[in-house]
Length: 322
Ligand SMILES: Cc1cc2nc3c(=O)[nH]c(=O)nc-3n(C[C@H](O)[C@H](O)[C@H](O)COP(=O)(O)OP(=O)(O)OC[C@H]3O[C@@H](n4cnc5c(N)ncnc54)[C@H](O)[C@@H]3O)c2cc1C
Image (cartoon, rainbow, N blue to C red; front, top):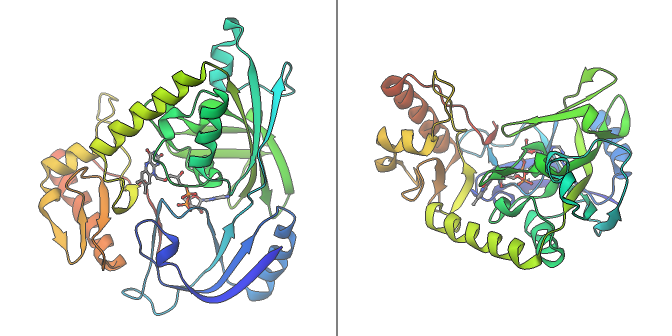
């Protein structure tokens, strides 16, 4: 079923609590509703943004516009996961399953809707001993957003266990892509179809393949990662995760954006109620009444200072809907 609402404030739909009023807010619970969405979008002739859990977004608010120039499509496809033991696969295996192939470990397929929440998937992994996503503990988004962003932490990322992705594309309708038709980069999922790279796609369902290990190992790794995360990141504050991607230096070594920002003195700077977190300088934080204008000013200032001091260009990891 597709629902339509008008004039919905987006602030509380994002973890950083920034966002103005969207003229149209559509929500779908099933992939087939996308055909209806397509008709509505054509009739309204305004662009729509695809919303997951809102944990990686900075959205314009009334410090920039009185009403947002786009509508929102909330992908809340939340069907119960389907778990299947597998012996043979039709498509290429994901990297983790491929790597342990010689170890004789049992493999399981888990299919979920794009609206399924990451913490719920991790709970399922703990209960079944599915390994591969332990690094994603404390990441608050949904599976669709996590695949779109190729979310990762603690040396793991979604790509490690990603087997197939079903997505909707205006030209091709609903298509299921295996690893022959997509690849992932740092915080990026890149699908293609009929030799054409796709943009403007909507992820509806995802199938993972997990190797099974002892349940207590999965549980303990998740527990340890959570302790580290809580000690090093502002997990309970209003943020959108890391504002910037970690850059590379001229030798090709990955640097920490947080450390560069800290060295550039960004931890000491506030603009009204927005600041960089005192716990981790790459987390832009809303202290309660922050505005998008202030967030953008801080991002620009951070890029300027890091460029001037270290000659390094920082690129936003958060998506800006401005
Ligand atoms: C406290 C905190 C900790 C975090 N830690 C991490 C971390 O360790 N590692 C990490 O990688 N990220 C982290 N994040 C960032 C964020 O949680 C992840 O990027 C997450 O995967 C985003 O998912 P989401 O559903 O919230 O996506 P959203 O924020 O809703 O959207 C992000 C992007 O994905 C697109 N999108 C969402 N759903 C779909 C869909 N179904 N089809 C097509 N496009 C879609 C949106 O259009 C947007 O461009 C953290 C965030 C917070 C607040």
